Length: 231
Image (cartoon, rainbow, N blue to C red; front, top):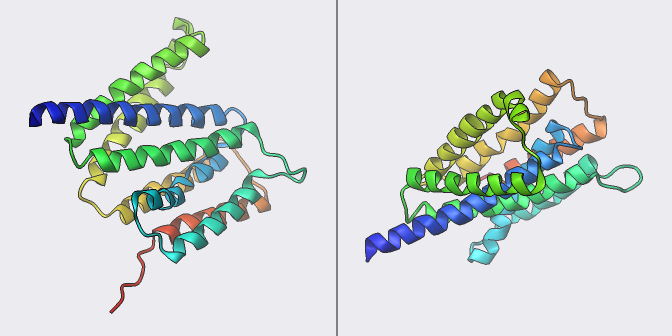
């Protein structure tokens, strides 16, 4: 009975983790069509603030510092995404939705990694990610061998390193580790996204956008600082 339950938990965890990871990746890549990598990285990092906020529904206490970080994050997002005409780019909206879906993926991993093996969960997750991505590509795209060949390098990097290695390490790290440290390290992707966008692609942010990035970084760091313990 325990083996059957474990297999059921593995399939269930792989399905939901794979669904959220695949959807989050799609939204992030769709958003990159009309927004910069640096901005996308900082907006995606909003999940660091969203994780403890959604923890309220899991009966977890949220420290006052988190509410301050939410205010900082909202202000930062305003500086990053809202133009003088009070509009938001479609790409920014996609990346914002991506942050919410990544939040769900992190919370799902935190739940299922306690009941199944981390490596098995990762393999099952990527099986469903592959299935969902294949179905999505056939429904919404027109893949050709020529196009796949031209993008082979990027596909292999995203599939093997960025996704395969990166998200497997995420699952293994979330089991038995301090979630504060893990979340803070994960948030560094936004810093690397901004640096890489400027160094490799020549992206340049305005002073207002840099200020928004600073507020976002302050928000994600503040949200993960350990609170004071009562004597």
